[in-house]
Image (spheres, rainbow, N blue to C red):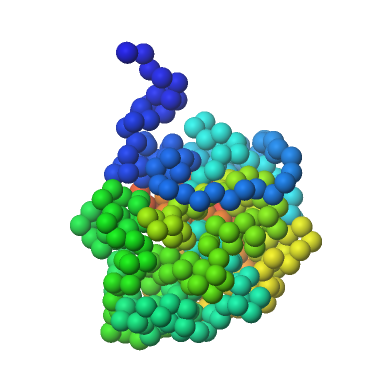
Length: 391
């Protein structure tokens, strides 16, 4: 057979060429980020009952210009330069419009990577409101076997705010690192021989006390997933369906990857559509309400996006360059701007941006070649802030 398949014509490579050892690399990521469930075992969460949605164009907005550090460029040009796959914008609770790259059909799920952390924290907030989860308790109250690990003397609050003094580095591109072993345990890389929970319990701590420094360490957020399961007695997939996805009125199915024991990758394994991600942002903007229902307590949302978190711990961390006046609380970023904007962020260009002043929510899903690109992140922040004032 010498002719190209429709798949090869569209993507430039054959489906068989996409493997666990390359699915996060370009060009394969332009397909795999929309189809993670074909590569990693996943739990699926059904949408709320309702009709099919139709795409809505952003129209003339795409041709308007934004001023960035490198000069002015159109909205559409920046979306392409930043490898955007899908975008959804809401204002005042109403849909403004969508944008999709040619390789991402409207309504397709896309992995949100570390915005999954923010979504998992919402589950924790819901359970806290129900009185079955204590954010100030020691981790060992829920996971007794954490004794002897870095989490043995840490609090759930340390886990939520990324202030666990954890001896671990997010070395995304080092195949010999502890991070690579972590990815194998999640089944994201080939060769995994230990479960995610077993891996987490081997992690050790630094000498510095917990609670002093913001350290971005993804294992904390997988630990949070286990914590909410232990507190509730329910699996993450079931919690997502019952507590968030159906009450939210989500229009499409979502999914989350799981390891060999069925433990959810709550640090980065969730996939959903841009519109449904925007609905989560709008729920947070509305103080935890959606469809006339209080999903997560208003006090928890206010603490998360406005008043909570340690400025000093954030300043001691390595991301203060992005939000110089920012804070981090319950796995959401307070950007420290006069607008009160807050966001969730994932590697390879995933953003959920909420601006309370303009009442704008922007969900941006991407397949940037590099996991982390600091300069591009600075441009994206400027772009999102500018765009929120244009719609």
